[in-house]
Image (cartoon, rainbow, N blue to C red; front, side, top):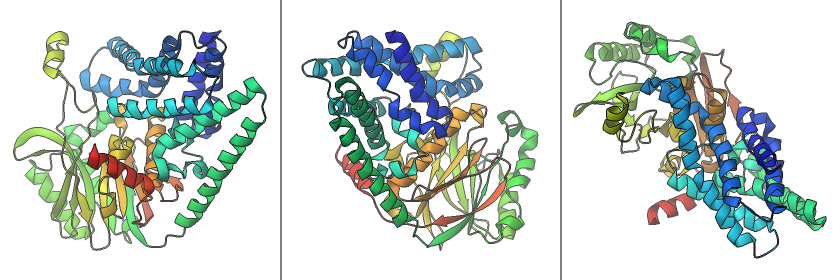
Length: 469
């Protein structure tokens, strides 16, 4: 029976990552797990929590199968086995949390606040230790509940996780004690949070200063994209004088949209710079490109002026483990006979500027790191997220998590976030959390980017932590 209850909680936990409109399920997802541990006097807490953690991590992390398979060429069975072993090992942190919680809880009656605080600690510690796996935090399930997530500007996605867990535990406490005070406490807390949410939404929807941005939303498979004979095809697709973009201040492509080396390939570089000069628009374009001092590639984005001159370059800082880089690559090759591809990471944050605005760019998975996104946020007006999620074979779960992160980063930082992507959800999220997700059938879209420069409590907290720890 315990196995079924834990399995049920795990399934309820991950369901909103498959369908974000099921966010309401999260508010009751932990109740079966709580019954399984409470009526057994917290026995086997390590193993029960470990099992729950494995369901969560495998449920939200299984899309990594696709890039690992593509980059490694390992047999499918080997990739699945590696994922299972990896998530079993990573889930030990949940078992450790369960063991620690038992040591605290067994001395007193069930306390909703203690359970919620220890879970909050688990998510924060997991984010620090497993920084390479920033998926599946409970708060992300609420991305479509805009009134609730407004408190993210106070404590980020982790504060939302704490709130949902606290709701679960208060309801559970009512069920086992039959004391109405726990329902009343729940109503008061949710009432305060919703009141704050409505106030903040109204405040940030009044922003009027704006900046016109044109984006591309593409659906190009990786097998087509990287064929050498398609280079000119994609150059012509993205670098063109489109009528739709006549009134824009900036045009942005998805991550690695053009498939030649901007640093090395002089012929194609001069061709597109000349075309941009003729179009007379600012362009921000994604490439995989080398540098003068290295023949290995970076995941890069270039800002090109209306005169066809390269103004800035940003190289992705935080790469995807086993997607863009591997550890012990020589050892892996020796054991398996497979040589895995590895990119180099950048080490600087670039502030892009035009006469009308300043922004930073977050490439693909970097959007999953709130502490990284917040860096230099006080120096910019908005944020661009260029993404290519074709490596994940159009996986809905991964796309939902990436877009949920976009929504949270917008609220946490109170900036407009624009996403332009390939085989993913493109769109815009305003400082209020209001979102416009782009239909896959639309290829070229003009967005009205609202400009805001206010800092949040969450920004300040992250700055203090990053400057002192």
